[in-house]
Length: 125
Image 1 (tube, rainbow, N blue to C red):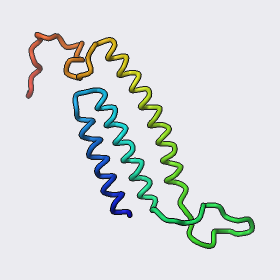
Image 2 (cartoon, rainbow, N blue to C red; image 1 turned 90 degrees about the vertical axis):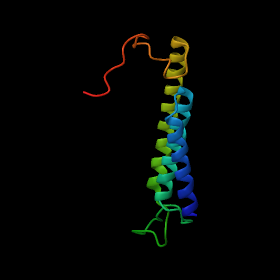
Image 3 (cartoon, rainbow, N blue to C red; image 1 turned 180 degrees about the vertical axis):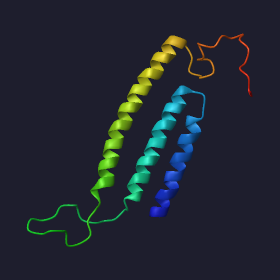
Image 4 (cartoon, rainbow, N blue to C red; image 1 turned 120 degrees about the vertical axis):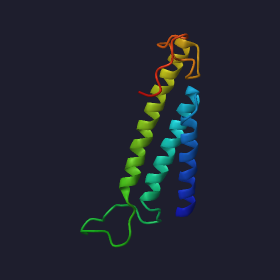
């Protein structure tokens, strides 16, 4: 099962990077979400997938008797999901506002600060 999830993480990362490298702002945002999900799945897989008991130690024992699940990757992933959703919502509103102001979704046409007929910067010094 770990090998399947490793391949799935690789696919998520590849698709996320491919979408992040596009010129469309919406595709870049979707790439950020897919890449973030790949990272979350990577953390979850690194925490080992086991069918262990819940990490609750009964009263009177110093440590659990058998194997138990690691709660740290689960807590990290829950926090990352909340932060990722908040960041995606903020960037989506920011992209919508940029689209309203500039009337463009393509990053090449969003260059307001650069004049159209200005000379290109030097490529080497």
